[in-house]
Length: 293
Image 1 (spheres, rainbow, N blue to C red):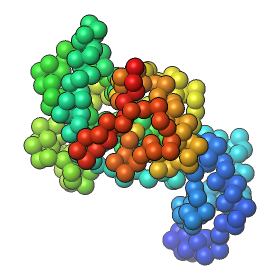
Image 2 (image 1 turned 180 degrees about the vertical axis):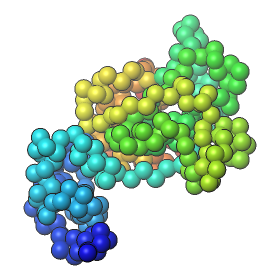
Image 3 (image 1 turned 45 degrees about the vertical axis):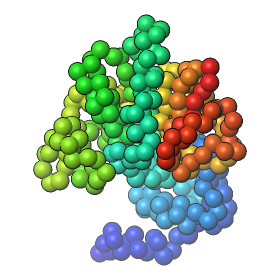
């Protein structure tokens, strides 16, 4: 009897993705979510989709493409495709220089502006939240800054991602030591409970202010339904997009942000040649973009 492992190896040897199949799948992915796969990443798409072919009992990537477009494939396989083509490498307290900007005055300036308006409402949007490390980090920072006064503010964090699987993981709030590798030990002690086998559960007080939701940044209707924000974090997401898609996403963020709001993108990302509607504000080791108004 042939083992599943042997079948997998046989499939890998026999099935390859030709240029036509690659073109069809690349265009389909771009149409659905805006992620662009360049020619030199064809091998990566092929390798990542081989297991989907095996799981579905399909013989070629052409068959897989037509399955995606069929009623039979539907949303279920589309979600599986999204999970295969995205990378969810992240950690708590990632890119600390940017977080220091938030801690060392930017958040206070937003709060002061709200108080002048007689409001204690602040909305933060984590767009591309992956398995939740970023929005949970932001909420921990809020607790660290505000301490007992956290309850006096209506600060909500909307955390969205394309993949429903990573959102389910984020909602569980359970993490490995590896996810906490860049987190100060004092923060781990205050906000996480060890549950054995090197895993930790985040404090329920941190979870209650975060609302996870599925979002496709290529879907204008979905983006228009997001509550307008004072601060947007969209870090290490633009790298998945071509120039046209980057411009559409940044335009949507501009529309979503309230006047005077702030946009954080990845440490190695830039709005140069993408958009000039934001004012770049330079900090030591970090740039933040502000919507003037």
